[in-house]
Image 1: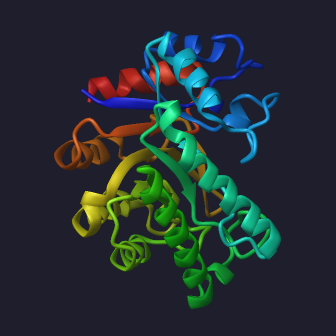
Image 2: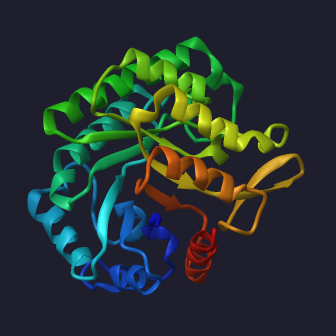
Length: 278
């Protein structure tokens, strides 16, 4: 039994927040949890820091719950170390607003990656400096302090395109910021290269060994290798050791939210069948 979750924006279609078309689609593919990025699922709905309210969150929660779908994770993916201090302050305030109102959505956490020294999120070794890491720690600390105030978990996702780029670096963050409100979202595919992709299960196992108590959600994203690069594809269609990863997850965190990534529409049911068969 796995507690599968989908990203709202992996269900195609022009969804309106007024209709229940998105929750209905999620229910139709047999999933009962969503990771919701408001701006991506409902682009016609203003969802900045000044737009949220208890009513906004409760409306959303009820729309999804009518279809037996829980908003498990509220996405607020920001560049928390944006090189422009004004923009950085704006996006940190937006995340803090999401933390303040997330409980009304019924969410258990608000999620983000750890940013980039450039304006866009791309791979650059400039992220791998001590200075970039310290900036990320400062921002995460600020968000966790806000999470503690509102009783809401901050879900942090490490990855190679960010200053928190490895299991070891994530462990450093966990050791520095000792809080029950710092959660870790692990996506093994975000931590591998074309050279070490066969070590994906040992990377996940190392994460559980080092900071398993802090792991609050898993992202499953399959991949192939093209021109020496990792290219994400639907779960079950690539090189990912789905069975090996699930065995580690089941042993360490049964019933944790497992979010299918880059797995869209009819491929969701396909991935669900594959996972059930393992």
